Every structure is written in C-alpha cells, then in structure tokens.
Length: 377
View 1 (cartoon, one colour):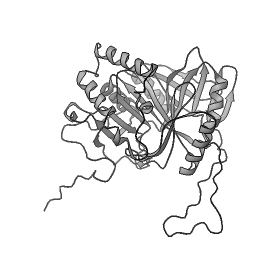
View 2 (cartoon, rainbow, N blue to C red):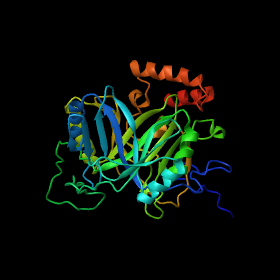
View 3 (cartoon, rainbow, N blue to C red):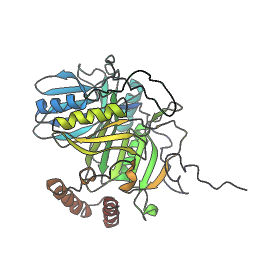
View 4 (cartoon, rainbow, N blue to C red):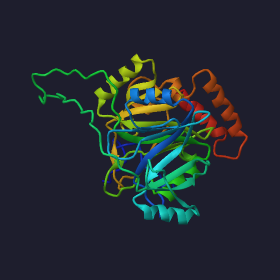
C-alpha cells in the first residue's frame, strides 16, 4: 500500500507544496551569497544606542562622533553599523558574497558599479536596490576580526545524565554575549516580487512559506529564506519577508550561547529599565528559543539560541499564519510584537493600511482581512 503521509509532517512545517505552488528557489540565480554580513541603521543619539547595545550583549568595535560598529564574539565583520542621523531608520542589509568574482558578476548583471568600502570595513561592495527601493549591499573581502572570548553554554544534567557533579548551577546576571547576527525580517507591500528578486539575485532558498488561513490559493504571504550552501547546513532563515501595508524593518536576531544566557541576559536588561516585547519561548518555524526586546529607538531585536540548520536538499514547508502558531511554548504573542499596541504605532499602521489599499501593490482588501485574522487568532 502507498504511504500517503506528507514527508513534512513532524519535520519543520505542517505540509509541503501543492502542485503549481512556488518552488522556493530560482532556477539559475546570479550568485549564491554565503551569509548576512551586517545591518546598517541611522540613529540620532549614539551614546544611548551604545548603552543599550552593551547591555544587550554586543561589543563595541569602533566608536567615533558619528559612527558606531557593534560586533559579536565570532570572528568576522561587525554585526551592526550605526551612523548618526537626524532620525532613527533602518538603512538596509549587507550580504557576504563567496568572493569578489561574485560581486563583479552581480554588478555586471544589474548595471551597477563596484565600490571600495571604508578602511574600517575593508573589501568592496556592489549596492543594489530591491523592489521596495531598499539598499541591499553585497560585499566581499571585508576585514575578519579575530574572535573574542565566548560565553560558554552551561553543563546540563539532562535526563539521567550526570555531566555535572559536586557543582551547582549559578549563571551570572550579565549581558547575554552576542555571538553573531542571525537574521533580519522585513515587511513589504510587494511580497512576491521582492521574494523573487532575492532568490534570483542572491540565490537564497525558502525554508518555509506561510499563508493566510483560507487564502492558500492566493499564494504565500511570508517566507523564511536561507542561504544555499549546498550540503553545508545553514540557518533556517537568514532573511524573512512578510506581506504588509508598509515597507519596513520588523526585527533582527542575534545568537547567544544557550537558554540560560538568554534568560539571565534578559533579567539584566529588565533590571536596567529596558522593555521586553515578547518571550521567552520557542518558535515553530526555525525552532529557535527566543526573547524580543525594544531598543530605545523602538527597533525590535531578538536574542535566540538552538535554531534549525538545513542543507540545500530540504524543500519548503507550508503552513497557515496564525498568532498562536508563532511559538511551540511561551506566553502568547504580545500586541507590541504583533504591532497592534494602542498608541502612535497603531495609528501609523492604520494609516499605512489605508494608504496601501489605494496603491498598486499586493496588499489588497483580501490580504487585509487575512492579516486582521492573524492578529486575533
């Protein structure tokens, strides 16, 4: 008898694709980037930004009157670049190419020029624009800074194991030391066009698709996208894209040692007056243990640990998008995390919805109804 069980059941998403649905990868991408290199922001108060960054677990690599570079403990480039600006805003991501030939290939394919990066970063970049007009850098040959001392995971007595004897567990109340940048999540009014652009230009591949309940036939509205490193496993997602009423940054995530580092680091942040947005919990897509915080400029940032790693053989999973489906365990997703808290942000989101409905994009009335259902599901 034929086994009709869906191979995605109990794997990473509830189902695989149906015939004719998006394949989750491009046939012949221009290049295949290796990783997310860094994120760039503008902020008016670098002193305030640095205080939060140190409490969150970053290490300052460079600080001038107008620039702040933040790094993790892993060898490599800085995770976050902050430059002084009149208002807080997200500038865009930078992706790491395999080599300078890939940067050249992208430049030739897009009609862009290669430019040297500042001496503090080293290497070269080709600056592209995604369908939303956001700047996307693809870089190579950047400076590799040596690793810093890591925060070691605790030795755990799990099940009947006795890895630790004659010793107590006393994780220190200190910042959870950021190891590296994991991913960035972006919202777009042109979701499918933007997804295809990243797959075709950067060679990313989809790990999971989400669709609004009852609207699967209209296609996905969110995708978790990873780097294609062949048989070498990569993070479940380096980039996530979601359909919404405005083109904006949603959050970025930074890996820490383990649950204890994440939890003790959260207590350190809370005691200093910083605001937790949602957590602690464990996601479904990606499986990460998570904890979300708002920085003083309102940007959402995440500590994570124990995420999934996929190689290029795994096909995309498909699942409905629901607020309750964002986590396997943990507190319910907060109104702040979902972006529906009363106040200025909610008013701005309402204006964005009304504006998006008047424009030619993928966010129509059907999608608005689906999004509102997700927020209350």
